Length: 312
Image 1 (tube, helix red, strand yellow):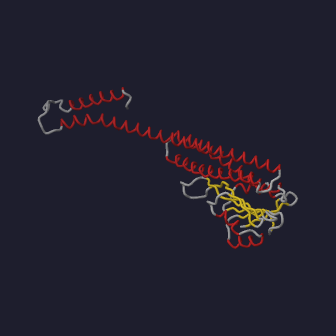
Image 2 (tube, one colour; image 1 turned 135 degrees about the horizontal axis):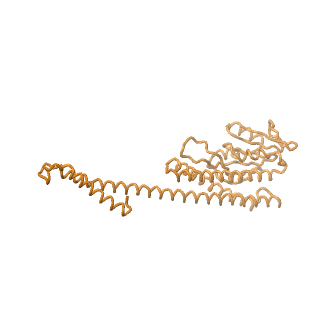
Image 3 (tube, rainbow, N blue to C red; image 1 turned 135 degrees about the vertical axis):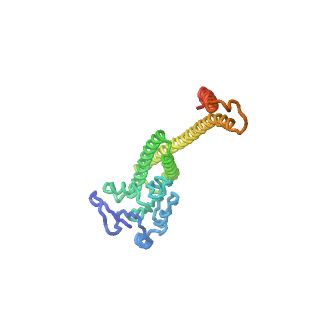
């Protein structure tokens, strides 16, 4: 699906075709013939439009025939039905600067582009460089929001896990850990991309725009630092709970071993008195009570010993 937007009198207006100063947003479902027509109509290399369809596409920038391409990673919710998959993944988004338009290509719907759409009426279509920087800003803001949400979810799961050691909470934490791996990797590659853009001045920024780019690099570094901190906290939490679970298991096994030892003595006494051989007091009217009392007495002594040693 291809959307065309234009800023007319500070209002976002949907139009039918790509006019000068328009923003072209490409969303799924995607058709190959639409890519071919758009590439021919806007004089864009076809691979510029299709590169972001590969979810593993690396972040980079390049230029061909005076058309500039920037590929950057953005976070999005994972709609997979597999309960072991990450809550969030990162996908590439292509930003293409043509001769008269700005084009964005998304393989999935994502919050960063929606945020940019809501503020598009405040943009100046003639300043496409600042529009690209604003898209970068929305992407970083989306990372920040998802990181805060992930941290809150982690805290809730930890509280539930303290109350009851269930596998469900551990699996949820593992899904969060997978999301953090995606975020850390993508933020690190985005940071390198932004620094290269600043160093090479690929977009031809003026001094004001360069200052804004420097602020974006700082914000991205902050998001990366947050992601690293949350990842370390999560890893430490999972290691701690693994140790707690192993310790609890050892305690249960130790109690079971003590109970087994305590019960073994009465079984031994009963086995001896159950033999088909002459035994003491076999003809006594207390022949039943003697082994029972002896078993209970020995069990109580052994149980008291283990209890005193705090092994029970």
